[in-house]
Image (cartoon, rainbow, N blue to C red; front, side):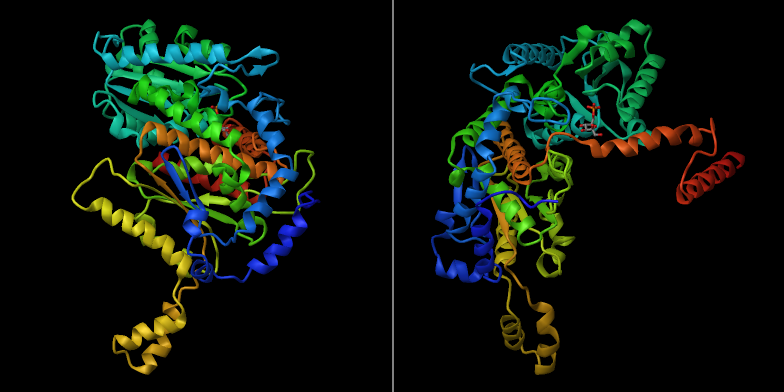
Length: 551
Ligand code: F6P
């Protein structure tokens, strides 16, 4: 077991002793310039991190830790194509997918940029054919509905972006996402679709994922029931994958396959051909703007000094709360209905990356790593879990995300939204003392006994940190920057914790056990070596299914 090895840690630990009991209210009173000091802009995003438990000494000390653990070297290694995903022996090059300049990136001595550009070009040609109606279904009608079949990174990212950029989408093409192997997901999606005008995009890096292949096979059966010949499949099924042979075996012509590469991690793949459903929804020009926004953040991350580097600052603040203040959760609240899938996307991005308990050398770590990430759009979250954020015994830093300008400026809705968002971060920071609560009750005429009984319930401890990301507007470009910001924040934290943020071995065991259980569920075998709970559940389930069959 080891604690992070950094000669800069003792100074930070000492500083923490001074900070642990300081209240942000007092800090704001003492430092009226906190906003100027602790905010910065990159492209269309302003980050206000002044409502954090930091002073002007904190960030330099945190940055020193980042320097001493080799963040600069690791960052440069990622951008130059080094195989930093050690346990899988792979480069980590989602940043190459959005590189706008021609500076080559080599993997095994080969520049990856020409291949990336070729696929982008093919995506553009295909998207414009489908969007213009030039790509016809088997009856000669244009495509009206696209169904992306994928799961995890082959679903969450593209789905979130298609939702986020709905205002920029073509009204002539509806894009649907099917991920769950629960037949209900596919059945409900197909219920109102016409096979002759539906295009399936089967998206899977491995092209072996059980859920995706099961859904894809059932979709193909549904399609073949309506079509006139098996050759019609070519006009209605395309694939996005790294696995050409498996695509061909499934029956999709590899001419209709959009490739990507093993150095693109699933949860980072929306910038690759996995973004085909995005391009079909918003068009290739806007998809390119989306890539441009990410590139802007990449360049900022590569070049800005740590003290003025947005992803580094966010990463270090998270580290500060997890490893010094003991925060186990991180909450994200987008005040934008278009971003309603953002928390789900971020869960995979962060938790699959940094939910690790051994370091790169396989040694157990003695400190906490990735927090549990969750959230809901504001203002809905306010009427659900904010009670705990304000007055619970748990403490969780919050990221508020809000555009200054709405894409749907109905009456004063957006003013109310902005007021609520800013009010929540202010309330979390300031809190309300028991004296203030008592004073309010007294002023409203409450008798002393009521004041004494209620005041403790109306007290808010405050001193609960948050970041606010104020976007000029949700556009393809600002969204690209926002997603790249979080990707790099997560990378920074992985480096601090010394873990491999790019593998995901933790998803394997459940998959293996499911494969063993399936024949028993299907009655093809019995009596596997299970614990009493699993065996009991299997038996009870078989009995309930038998009763249902007999009804
Ligand atoms: O099970 C986890 C995972 O491997 C994710 O990392 C990945 O995004 C998802 O499954 C889907 O994988 P694929 O794209 O290969 O179907």
